Image (spheres, helix red, strand yellow):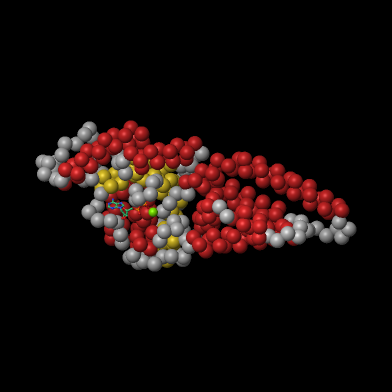
Length: 338
Ligand SMILES: Nc1ncnc2c1ncn2[C@@H]1O[C@H](COP(=O)(O)OP(=O)(O)O)[C@@H](O)[C@H]1O
Ligand SMILES: [Mg+2]
């Protein structure tokens, strides 16, 4: 005899259904609180799309070496074919290298500009103040992610962590930002023509800052296009049937909807399998199941038809390709009512 279940609810539109309805889906992200299973869900989804024949890149911008651990294979710093899964490549972005490169680029730009404007100050101070903050590192990783997307070498990209703060900032700021860049460009143009008028040589100089602004604006616009295209992009939010992870994704989903970023749906992870729980099961497990039942009610109320899958808590952690295939089956195939 298993423990009594509460009123039955079912997933109306499964993950498989979502993919069928979005055949052009190309950029997939997973968001949620730490420890809920974003990395394993990303791994399982990448395995799934690769097995469906899409050349897939599973990428992580997470500074912790999460993908190498997940796949039992070193995928750090370069695109690496995943053993046992044709079409699948994995890549753990080298955070330190990315940040250093970003600093070098900023230094170059500032040096260019100081030289162009004939200001004889050393660039170091400016570089320090531009790069000595945590937001800089985050932005550097975000830019790296965008570069990957732009290079367009794969049919599908699965990112193990949603750049939640950055995507939101990018989209929230993009209008203000566009205005600002346009204004900057206008005043640069004026300064440029004044310079030309005063110059005896009549030599037309290239303004490096201006070129940078134009290029940067273009990149941001392109990123915005891709990230807000519901045919190409989906952010999935992972939660447990617990209060805090639910609160976290509720906030994310609200932000994302507000900015028109496509929310693919909600994945509920680590649900205890009711069929193995009976009155003789240890009390803490029965209590935990009862707690999950309550939070499931909240999940249905809040997210309703956005729930794509309810994934059971396995007997062991998710590691290695075989386990990812098993998880992918749980995530992507429709299941009977809860
Ligand atoms: N359904 C599950 N059953 C058992 N263990 C799981 C399940 N989902 C995730 N885990 C384990 O939980 C831990 C956290 O998962 P992870 O994907 O690293 O979370 P996140 O990336 O959100 O921090 C990992 O050890 C993972 O193997
Ligand atoms: Mg992770």
